[in-house]
Length: 395
Image (tube, rainbow, N blue to C red; front, side, top):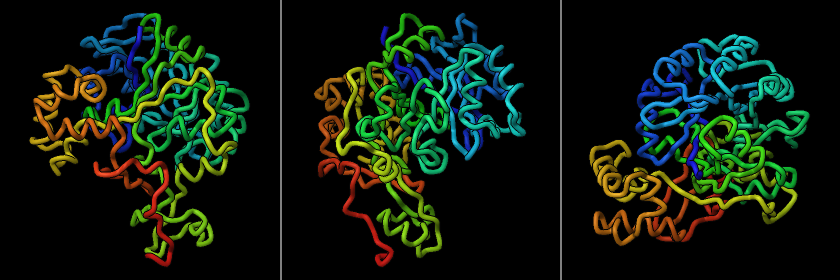
């Protein structure tokens, strides 16, 4: 069975997360998105595990269900050098035991615990309990594994189970790094709120024998991910090298010459695009035979908001979003499967936008420094480069 799965989210206990990130809200919103399987996130937080246990029914083999939505236990851990790791866990008993064993001073405060453990120690610990582990948003400049290591094996000592690409990278970028040819890629939302433009903004279409931890483990181990769906990486907020204060894009070499300081006084942060170029072995991607297609998407509400120049959560945008969901079932169906002529009957402007997104006739002003990229629908996608790069003299 083909299942749409988003393994990396956060609960209401994580820093900067919505208080509405509760199972009772995540389940119905995920269904509207078109997901069938969602990670719980924050599975080392005792209070969150209590909520999961109280508000779901255990379906067996690591799956917790409510309102026809299935959850698997997942967590993100911040380890040595502020590197983030994503862990998929077999059941609550194991999650509680691992939480007790993990040396961390904040695991009862923050849903994403911090530990002094490095990748090798974390991998060894969770493998004792049959968990899956890999780097979260592997290339991002603040907390990605490749910010501190030139090789994934330098971090983990041995082979982890997967690599999560993050919002600022895609398969075409990652497959220029030769050591990643043996790894399945995961595309997850890292959502901090239950809005459908956050949940499932990146997701995996995965072949499962059934919805169970055993099947998830088998599918990842045997590279049975059939498609990765995610943002155009230019839209990611760390895609390009940019100032974290004024968000101006800066040529990476000029930034290095100026000790990563912007004339505005802010810190310039190296972008995912440049970091991958530093460790890449090929100029063009070399995809292994098992690598599935990567489909670029953008949340439907954000597309509608762009068309009507309104906020994503405004009544105008949400009412138009809901009308499309009522007509076609899920957001994923609207974005990928619904006939354009039928969408245009409901709203010709939105139909035109979805057509532009499907055929790639959009323009992207890349994101960087913590600011998401922006889109328009007049020109072709700018592939991971921009003519808007600034030098310090331009400031």
